[in-house]
Length: 379
Ligand SMILES: *Cc1c(COP(=O)(O)O)cnc(C)c1O
Image (tube, rainbow, N blue to C red):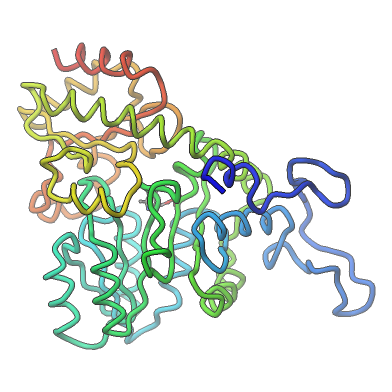
């Protein structure tokens, strides 16, 4: 089946009780038992809820894995993932991470895990990490990264990690399963902030983990129930509704982002444009191999640093100044002052998260209107 058909149908049969074409929203915390310990499949809604079960089934199929677990946010999913790596574990992760993930890794470090952040877009760094120091338990990757849109060769990194007996988790939030399927490339775990493209309408906070193998799914089901960071049934329903149009939306996001990237790349007031679809992007050929399109996120550095960037932000009209991404509406973010403010300044500067850097979540509006807005803001 093709993607647009799968997104509408896969894992989503009409409700067997009533024929309802949408999954009922089961607003219940508990379930009646006919005798002690004898329930009809559900016991308590932290452990399992029928609406969440539909979402988990659908997410597992979209990431082509053994199954998935839904969480109350992307970071709740990441917390469950890192919770399974106690004191003495070693986690190696990319150095251009979602800032909240970086904060969580600080917590893992304070609990006694060894955490090393490296630039995984160069596989030599991954090889070196595995060659030096204690055994690595988990390699945690983001590609494309946030906000610098660096690309990691997933197949290459996974091969190195598996040779060193490490598990590999990939944050697939920026790509969505429509554009990139890390489990098919050998990854063990995929993480999502369903807040972004999967939900797609900026109306919920949610997260998920998907697994290649059933044993790992069952291990993390225990951590999901124990940590308790589960989504409510109505948020599960909203993610399921968003998934129906994921293919249409992601194609529109990517087509508009390509137009925006070309426009910014040619603009005299822009020092550099970061978009994996641009042929001069260092990760372009890898992105072409492992992604079906280059996604809806574009970053660009305005010449003149912070004052020039602030001027552009004041003038933009269609791009709302806000954190988050992946909704139908276009957003613009200033990473150094907003999403990545918690990253130490010297780390930010060394990585290129400068005062002039803007990150655009390109929406599904008409591209000509978006370009006109950028043109007047940069004039
Ligand atoms: C937003 C985001 C997260 C965190 O997800 P929340 O739903 O905000 O907790 C993690 N990774 C990436 C790449 C994100 O964009």
